[in-house]
Image 1 (cartoon, rainbow, N blue to C red):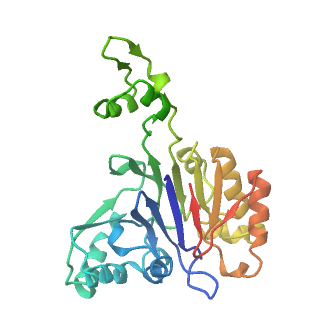
Image 2 (spheres, rainbow, N blue to C red):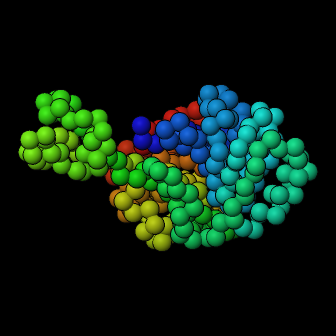
Image 3 (tube, rainbow, N blue to C red):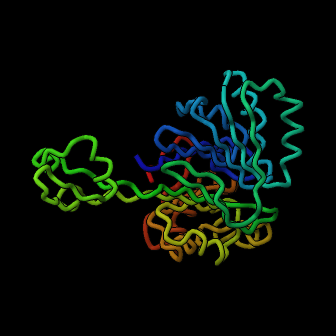
Amino acid sequence: MGLEVNILGCGSASPSLRHLPSCQVINHNGNLFMVDCGEGAQLSMRRMGLKFSRLRHIFISHLHGDHILGLPGLLSTLALCETRGEVHVYMPAEGVELMRMMIAQFAHSLTYTLEIHPLKIGKALIYEDKSLTVETMALCHAVPAVGFIFREKPRPRQMRGDMVEFYKVPVSQRAAIKAGADFVTDDGRVIPNSWLTADPLPSASYAYCSDTIYNPGVVQAVAGVGTLYHEATYADDKAHLAAQRGHTTARQAGQAAREAGAKQLIIGHFSSSYIGKEDVLRTEAEEAYGAPVLMADEGKVFEV
C-alpha cells in the first residue's frame, strides 16, 4: 500500500481555531508511526479513525512545545486503553530525563513497557523492520532538531499469474522466484525469471522537515525522496521573521524540494498570521518548485 500520511496538526507555535500544532501519523501496512505530538493529537486520532492499538512508535523532532506537549497525555491514554507490549518514543537526548519525570508524575500506571530512545542530531538509522526503515537527519533550527526519512525497502518482483499457471510453478518455489530466481521444470528446462515476473512497484519514501531554515545540508539529506513535507511557516513578506526564528518561507520550501528532486511537495507548519490567506503560501512555493504543491490540513490523508 505504500505510505499513507495523515495530517493531525499543521499549525505553528500555538493552537488556533484554524490549525492544531504539529502532528502526523504515517500508516505503513496498518502499522502507525507518529511524527511529533502537539496538543490535540489524540483527539485528532479519534476523529480520523486511527487506532491507538496500532501506534507503537512516536518520533519527536525537537523540544519546542508545539511539537511535544501532546505526548504525556497520549502516553497516559494508551495506558487507559490497556495497551500491552512495548511503545517506543524517539526524541532528542536533551529531553529524555524530563520526559521520564513527566511520565512518572502524570502517567505512572502504564500497562505497557515504555522505551525512550535518545536521538543524536545527525544522520542515523533509528528504526528497521522487514519492509521499512526510518532515518534521522540534522535540521537547522533555534534548538537541536532532526528530520525523519521513511523508506520502504525494495519490493519483491510481481508474479505473472498467466505464466505461473502455464508452467505450473509450485507454491513452494514462488517466494524464490519473487526474489529473482529462475524456475527449472521437471524435465530440466530453465524458465527465465523475466518470463514469470514483472518489475516490482516502486518503493515509497517520505521525508519530514519541520522546523528548519533553508539549508543545503538538509536538501542533500533528502535528495531523491519521493514525497517531501517541508515547513513553510511564512511568506515572503515575513522572510525576516523566518530567518530570526529558524524557519523557512514557502518559497524556500519550494526551492528545497526542487533542488532535492522531490517528486511531490507538501507544505505545512503555517503561521496563524496567514489564516484565511494561505493561498499566498501555496503560490510562492509553487513558483519556486515549478509544479503543483499540496497543502497540509487537519484531516487530510496523502498517499506517498
